[in-house]
Image (spheres, rainbow, N blue to C red):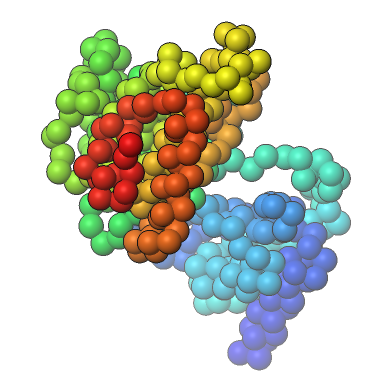
Length: 406
């Protein structure tokens, strides 16, 4: 009898290996009927192929209470993972390919039964599959704050008029996911969102880090508009987001926390962005995410005979000043110890505020030679534009120690 059961288990492993690794024909696998119920345990897992940066992965989505945890696994590992889940954790599985469905039933004593049935799914053409976007927050999986904010309906379907906002939120969550490894571990995290506004992205940040990633954190959203803060606070109570709070306040005057690990500032106007960046640097924040808005400071300052043909046109001067402002911000953050990137936040057709500054604090001090080159490059650029940037003035003590000054 044991030999028979062993043979059945080997047959299951062979089928999984063939459709996942060799043929790569798996369209979807659904595992259900857990063997033993555990507190906050996962009651279902789905597996489907996804393409990321040209490579094939299998995405394991684990449904654990209100959370859905995602993990992308190479085909070489996915077959063994899937077989292990079927033989150790779940009693039922449906493996769907373009040519057949495999119904897997496992008894309480571990006996494996495999039924081969006609295919119920059709494989997508490769090109169509490659074009399909795989979002961190999946359509079809209801997320409370997205439902409340009118982006999804109760079944998780994204409303047609809100799809651009849905894409923007997912792009933001992807950027959050990228910086998670740079956050401190082993202690609660403090995160501040300056100029949070209606807080679509504040709720997205909290949901992903707290509900999906399971991190211990405290998030504060700050804005000057009392009605907006009142509305957001009501949503916090409704969702039961105990570690998220919203406050009315000015960025430059906020001093409630002594240590902050991540600073987010989205569409803070003009030098309010610089005030938030100054706070982040003084806190020693591990991560800074900033989408600037309405950069007027350099528009009033920049002068250059060489750039005369550009600066004589108001619209060109405005765009150039905005780009130069963000270049200055990025360079100053590099000088004070961050690795800074300027990224596209969302496509231009969705919003003109499409540039995000992402800065991650370097684990080690910059070598003196490298810092000196950054300082020289920054000074030459600033002086060429005849600019006096707010952020440089705000960070004068820190920058003076590093040789930045006039």
